Image (cartoon, rainbow, N blue to C red):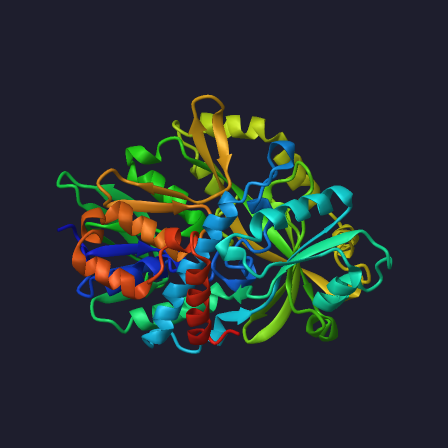
Length: 492
C-alpha cells in the first residue's frame, strides 16, 4: 500500500454527475454489498454538465429533436435513431419510477414535469420534411398520439406566443407529443446521491480532484487524489473505475493509458442561452418547441424555445448559442485543450479541424453576435419578442469527441462514446448522455458475466421491466409502461 493510501473500494466513480449517480445506483441495486467511492472536484453534485442551467431538459426523448430523423435520398426520412432514443428514454423513465417507488428518490415533481414537445418549421421545403417525418413516425409504437398541424389556429392554441405577431396566412407546420416532459437532471442527481451517501459502503467526497490514474503490475488501478480544501494528496486503489466527469473525462482517460483510448481527442464548445425575465411571457408559454438547424450547422445548433422548471420556478429559455473556450469544464482551466494533446490524437484533431472548417466559422460567428442579432434568431420563433425581456446566460461546456479514422484521419462524433478497457476494469463516457440505457451498456461492458447471472437478471427486471428492444416493437407495451411510470412519477 502506498503512502497515504486509503481503504480500496470495489468501485470508484469520478465526477458526481447524472451518469455516475446512475451507474452507482444500478450497481448498489444489483449487488448491495458493493463498496463505492465518488470523487467530485466541486463542492456539490451536478454543478457542471448535469446542472439544469447547463443542458437541455428534454431528456433526449426524440419527440421533437428533428436532427434525430435525418432526411436521406429521395426524401426518405430515417427514423431508426429517433425510435432507439425514444425507447432509451422509456428505459430511463422506468428506472426513475423504480427509484421513486422504492422511496430512494422522493417528490418526483422536483425533477420531472409534463411539458408538451413540439417540432416547429416554416417554409415549403421544411413543411414537406415535417410531413414526411410525421408519416414515418406516426405508426411507431413510441410515437403513437403524435399530432400534426399546418393550421395557424392550432399552433396558436399549442404555443400562443409563437403565433402572436405572425402573418395570418404564414406557412407553418408543427407536430406535438402531449406526453413530453421537462427533466431537471441536477435535482434528480442530487436526490440520488442523497440516498447513496446514507448506504453502507458508499463514500461521496466533494472538493476532491483525481489528478492521475496508473495501473500496477497486478492489474489494479491506483488513483492520485487531492483534497483541495485540506491541500492533501493521497492514493487509492480499486478494481473498477468509471470516469463520468463530463468534459473532464478525456484528460483522465488519457492518463489511464489504456489502448482503447488511443486516437481520441476533444474540441471544447461552450453554450449560451437567452433567458426570459418577463414573468408574464414565461407563464403564457408551456412547451418545448424545437426548430430545424440551418443547413451546414452542427446538431448542437438546433434552436428551441424551452419551458423549464429550475429551482422550483418556471423558466423560459431560447438557444442554444454556441461559443468557444479552451476549457473542458465550465469551472475548468484555459489550458485544458493544450494539455489534452498527445502524439496519438494530434493528427486526428488537426484532420477533424480541417474537415470541419464550417464548424469553426459557425463558432466564430456565434461568439461575436450582438444581443440584437441573437434576438433576431429568437424572433423567428417569437415575432413579438422584446429585447429588454431577455438576458444572456452562459450554459454548460461540452467537449465534442474527435475519433481517429483511417480514411479521414479524424472525425467528429456527435453522440456518446463508451471507451472501456479490454477487461472492463475502467470505462469512460465521452459526449453527452443522460440515459439509464447507457448505464446498462456500461455495466454490460464491464460486468458481462455478472449481468447474465439469475440474481442480477431478476433485479434488472424489477428495475426496468420493459426492455428497449421490446418497447420498439409493441405499442401496447409502450402504453402500459407509460401509464405505470406516469402514475408513479405524478405525470398525466
